[in-house]
Image (cartoon, rainbow, N blue to C red; front, side, top):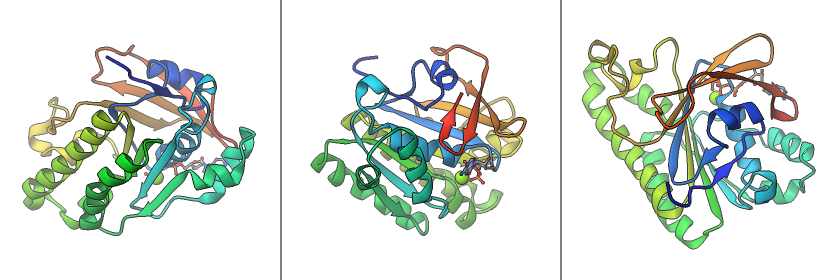
Length: 239
Ligand code: ATP
Ligand code: MG
């Protein structure tokens, strides 16, 4: 694919799994259970996008849309420090936005078009998590249709931002045993994977021993199969 650029995750193993890192012009989903490392990866990537290209970044800025209130500037500080970056600079290059409900989350993404066209140094947009408000506001089978419709539109909008503005978009999704349970109707989804038709890369994260985590790419014919192990450390994502 033309002109796709990559952002390092901080782990060579995970970068290898992703074909070099997180791609621009693409929406990448990290899904997995609580504590599997989704939010830590989001923090790390919002720092790493700022690295120069020779160090695996894009000398870019990040937009961090936080729906769960789990963003911590202190983690950004630790990660920036570990990379020898100027902490104030790194913090200034992250647009932090707290989304309080689905309408707000959707409105924020509506407004991003203006922000990213004004500031072409924005190279990363994160929505952590993309599903939590939708899940809370449209629970259960009875709300499935409207939930899917609203979420699909939101995801398409994010994908379009990625493609038009050469931005890496990252979404997270807390999923327990089966990744299909939320997006799709569980009765239809068995073996059917996602029911939303959004191009992109889906990465499943799983807990392993201690600070070790396992990553696996699903449904990506252009990427190697298999799993890799990485670590969540005080300094950030590492091998
Ligand atoms: P959820 O679905 O609940 O949002 P998540 O996938 O976002 O979960 P994270 O918050 O990314 O999970 O991961 C939490 C884990 O990150 C902790 O259990 C711990 O192992 C690790 N972690 C968090 N902060 C630090 C730190 N300062 N030093 C080392 N490891 C940390
Ligand atoms: Mg999280």
